[in-house]
Image (tube, rainbow, N blue to C red; front, side):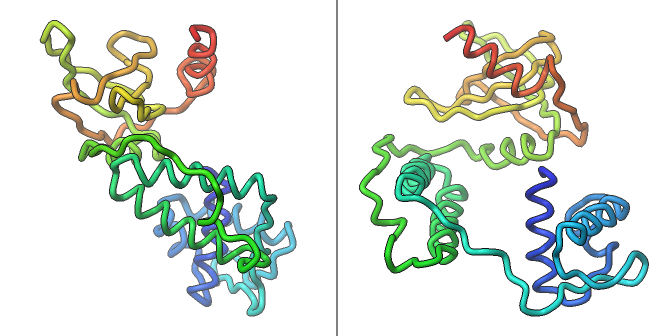
Length: 225
């Protein structure tokens, strides 16, 4: 989880908890207590009305709320296109999340009755098809930077066992694919979903760097385009 996302979620969590202990927040977000101390200090320095201190507990003073989100008409249309596409990927979890996201964004607009996200005149016509049951597992592995182990079948039918650091999932007209750093080949590889015969998420973490991370992979893709 990116720090910016965690900070936002910490604020929402504190709004619902009342007094929050650092240990409880650390357990909830699966980070160290020291990380929570640093995050709270950052939020306090940014002007959020958080009372309390380390070792005692923290309280977000009543009346505070995150500001309404303001979007231009073009930004609303862009969101509508993206959410419509996600709803048609065939992944029921992502489809449900897209509908919930649309409702949350709509409710957070300063004047929601004047511009409805669902009314944007753009729609994705990507054919809807079923997603692999491993879709959620791979998304979680990418989000938490976990190595996955796969058994992959080549076009000739040969099987190989790989350890892959997954970076991005593709929903293409020809089917789903996942790209990442293959530890066996020591390079970036893209795997067809329908050729992955086994997939397991390990507890081994990986760190993105200049040679094996997403930025390097996308730069390589642009060079080959």
